[in-house]
Length: 94
Image (cartoon, rainbow, N blue to C red; front, top):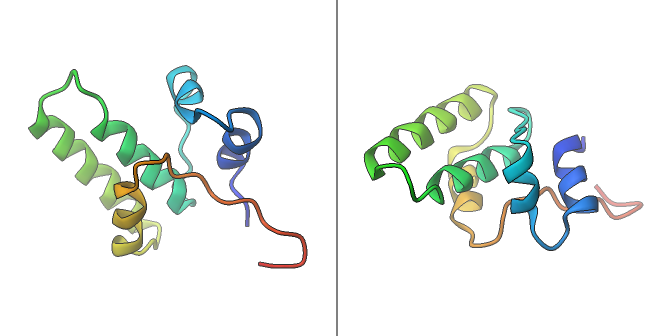
C-alpha cells in the first residue's frame, strides 16, 4: 500500500520535502515513513525546549506503535539525515 502523503512529497517536493512540511503537516499513522518524518520534524524544531521535543517524539512513537509499526525500524528511519519518505514502488516489484 502506498501512502498518499509520501506520494505528494515524492512527486511535488522531490528536492526539499520541508517546503511541504512548512505548509501542511499531514502524517498518516498507517505509514511508518510518515511517523519517522513526524519525529524528524519535531526533532528539528529548534525553538522548543529539548524536554518538550522528547515528550512529543515519545507521544508520536507510541501512536505509531499502536498502529502496529516496528519501533526499531521507526527509530532507524527517524535517525536518517534525509527526510523519511516512502520510496516509489518499482513496477513489477513490491
